[in-house]
Image (cartoon, rainbow, N blue to C red; front, top):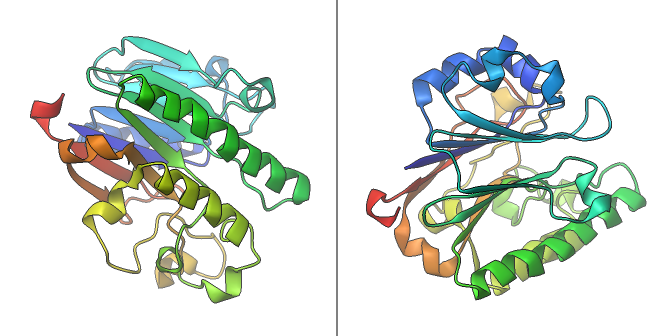
Amino acid sequence: MKLYSWNVNGIRAAERKGFLDWLDQTQPDILCLQETKARVDQLGSSLLKDHGYHTYWHSAEKAGYSGVATFCKEEPYFVQEGLGIERFDYEGRVLITEHDNFLLYNIYFPNGQKDDTRLNYKLDFYDELLPIVNEQIENGNNVIITGDWNTAHHPIDLARPKENEKTSGFMPIERERIDTYVSNGWVDTFRHFHSDANRYSWWTYRFGARERNVGWRIDYFFVNETFVEQLDDAEIHPDIMGSDHCPVSLNLKRDSI
């Protein structure tokens, strides 16, 4: 079973750049998109249904901002927009879907680079999400958290760690939030399978960064540790263009579904 996650930096722009061709060729069982930047009433049937997927959208109240979407081959048992926390939900950052053997959280985590207010908003989001997903584990569910986490966890996860220690996205206070998830039993699936450096999922559009692979790994699939034995592999797909991010993927063993 193939799960993909991709921050498309605008779904309408991604469509013009070949998103639907990629979807047809790749055929993920579930696809999670972040930063869709569109309301459903702004989209045509080519994105909403003509591809054969069930699609679910959580859009921000602010036009052209944030937003997530989940595409599923099999209709989920349950869909929830948002966390039930108004200060986060009006920005359209979370879709939760229930599948045969797991709950899937598709999340566009806040970016903290604008100012201290947004940094604190981002840290609060991390803090308030953790007990919600931990409770699901305590209730006996498997949980997959995917999306753009907007933080590189370790120095291996970005090309220029020393130069970015004071930049939001690699500040110690942000990295400590991911440490807390790990200490609570959450597993970074890519690092579970791969220890190599120079593997990134986001590159600035400036300075020819992508061509030189001066990037950051900020897009993840995290799972609860008891679900790890049901994983087959996790990957990053830097050859896929169309956004400043590339897709990341997680394969589950079919007998685990």
